[in-house]
Structures are given as structure tokens and as C-alpha cells.
Image (cartoon, rainbow, N blue to C red; front, side, top):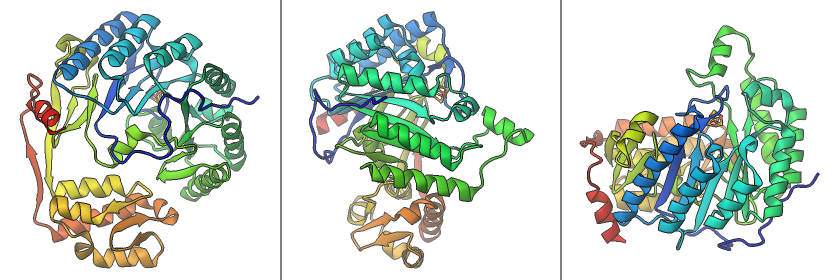
Length: 423
Ligand code: SF4
């Protein structure tokens, strides 16, 4: 069955990503019916009265930021399972965002899980201005779906994409996982065939990791599952990338590919170290030079009624800015802009890491042309090791890491007020 997304009715036609999709707004909806076996996110059980109170608190927090003059260029509603909200809560949340921020938005994405998407929720989302829907398929192999603890089958993913196509969703994205125990070349082929039928504008290809506290980690330590060999993970990753490239997908970030101008502007902003606000329990923000998280605690978030407690507040400075630029920027195909980093921080990365850069270049892991450092396809296979080595070298040649702790207070937002003036 062919289930193809269509760009007809695209709210904001674009042939290439705008240079500056900052600031973004992330809205966290942390409710799931059950926990997938690989998941270590901040999630809570689905209970509709709690979810309704949660949306009321979200509306307060969003309204407070809007009153302070915050104007996002992109919105991403993620989770958890945003599509698990009941129809009234869904309408209330989307309506609030639409009333405050719809005009001037470059992109508005919602994450929907296959088991909780329906036509009514999609139509409501489109009517409020949503122009991009991201679904977590993870794999089209039934044994893989069962091992990963997903609550849908492969057929359901085809059905929801058919529905999105019929309703004219402008852009769609599909998440896949590479490296799950039992994955083989045939299942990768099956996933690629499914992508070809669905034809989303964007594919995220994530590597499975065994995070402490997850079901998969427990199964691994008990010896009840056999992890894939690293070589197999690399082989399957190459098979995916090759197959997606043959289907016309272009890689723009280590784990993300697009066609038809379908990059995720919201995520590009993270990798470009742009500013963003996160609303909801556990949501992270980076604004006016400060990073913080809302306390990840759903009852406390509801009680705070729009003024959640901020935790992990820090103001990255000096070396830490360079660190973040390297960690985020090397994920992108465009790499890191050396002149920009030097102008921003005074650090000459080529000067400080010359021997490492030369070695990586000789080994074919990266290209350093004097203006930028870009990781090659071969280098992306060992990206974490490259980043760690460069950061260690920078630390050795530097004079300390400047992180200034500041007090966490959600009472007032002077930094937002000043950023509004900057715009
Ligand atoms: S649906 Fe997403 S957030 Fe929810 S348990 Fe699964 S992976 Fe975690």
C-alpha cells in the first residue's frame, strides 16, 4: 500500500533552510501508556485528569512567556506522547500556542505515536497551524517492535501515514532505530522498503543505546538479550544510509536526513546553538546565555501553575562555549565555522588542536579547510571518539572551564525581557 506524504498545502514553502531558525519553543508532554524498553526519558503514566491539569499549567507557562514578549520561530511539541492527550486538552494546548505564536512561525511540529494518532487530532492540529508531524516507527519488523516494547504494529504506521497523506499534512518525519538485538540485513531491507512506500520528508536514524535503568539495560545485564556486535551496527547503519541516499534522502546531521527541503528547523537550531525555551515538566531551555531545566516532576509542575522551579541552572562561558560548539556543530554536515567561534570566544581551534586535526584528516575522518571543520561519512562512525579527543586536547591547552552557577528562580524573566529588546 502506498502512503505518501504530500507537500500540497504547505503552509510555508521553502527551498532551503533559513539561516537563523532561532529562537525555538519546545513543549513537553511527558505521558505514555507504557515505557518502551529502551526509553530513559522523563515520562509519567497516562491519567486523563492529571493530563488535563498538566495542560492547564502548560497554558499558564506559555502565556507567561508570551506576555514577556517571547516570539518563537519554530515550535516542537514532543514527549512522551503528545497525541495521547484527549481531544479537549489537545485543542486547548494547540489553540493557546496558535493564538500567541502562529503568525511568523517557520515550522510547527508535533510528535504523534502511531497508536494514538487519529484523523480528528490531525485535522485539529492542521487547523491550528501545525505543518509537520513526526511519528516514531522505530522498525517495521514485528519482532523488533516487540523487543523495543512499542505499542503498535508495522501496519498501523502505514495506516497513519496514509491518513496524513489524505488530510494533506505538509511534511512528515519518521524515526527509525538501528542496532537492536536481532536486527539483520533482511529487516533493514524491510525498513527501507517501508520508507520508500511512505515517502516521508524526513528520516531520523537513531542508534540504540542501553541506558542505565531501562528495561533493555536490565535484560542485557541479566544476559537475556545478546547485543549486536559493533561491526554489525556499523554495517546496518551503512545499509540504511546507502538505501536512503538511493531514495533521494540527503544527510544533514549525523542521524538525520531529508528530501524536498524537509530539514527539521527546530532541531537545526539546537545544533547551531541557537536559543530556545522549553515549557513543561523537565523541559530544557537555553536563553540569553543561560541553560536550565524545569524540575522533572509532573505533580510539582502542575502545582507551580506556570512558574516551575528551575534546576541545573548554568551560564556556559569561555571554554564551555567552545565545547558546546564542537559537540553540537560537528554533528552537522556543514561542520563548525572556525572564524565564528574565534570571534565569539577568542579560541583558535586549529592552533590548539593542530596535530589531532591533521591526523584525523590524514585518516579520512574529517576535512579541515581553514574556514570550517567537517566530519566525513567515515568520521561520523566514530564521532563520539573524535569529539572526546578534541575536547580533551582543548582542555589541556586551555586555562579552565568557565561555568558560572547562577541562582535558579522562575519568578521573573529579566533575560527574556532583554532578549526581546535585542530583537
Ligand atoms: S513513546 Fe517515546 S517517550 Fe514514551 S516510553 Fe516510548 S520512547 Fe519513551
